[in-house]
Length: 158
Image (cartoon, rainbow, N blue to C red; front, side):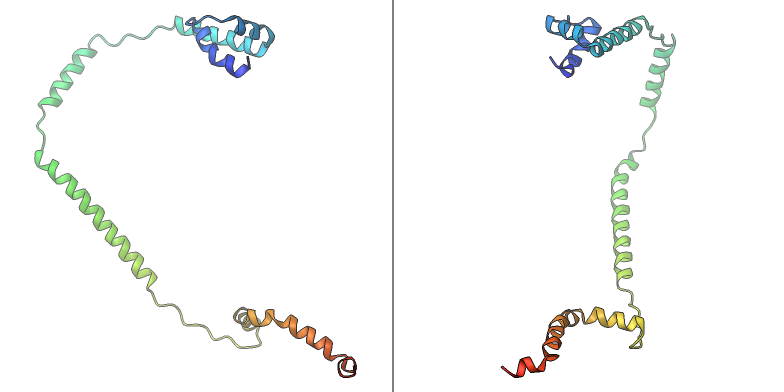
């Protein structure tokens, strides 16, 4: 057996509920880690068997019964019971309306006017690159054409 399977059976063996089978005993002889774990569990169970539960106060039951009678005799405000659920629902609905209004009006604020940027400046050049990215991406084709034009004799004379 594997150690994981033995550990599942160890708690019962340590508590004395079940007996260790021959397969478990054989594994415990061969595996010192599992044997020490079982020994530790048996010591823990022995300590738990020695532990004494503290006794409750002799007047505990009497005071508990008196408190239960007081709570049962206490008058309840019945009109609050039917008012509580609608008040909570109304407050939740109001909160949702306010949140929706805030969201609606914050997204509808006027956008600032576009700042005029002078061409030839760094910011202007960057904006031109962003706006005309597709055009500038095709400049590789123009570079190829310039190489062909630099050799006019090869293009004109067959």
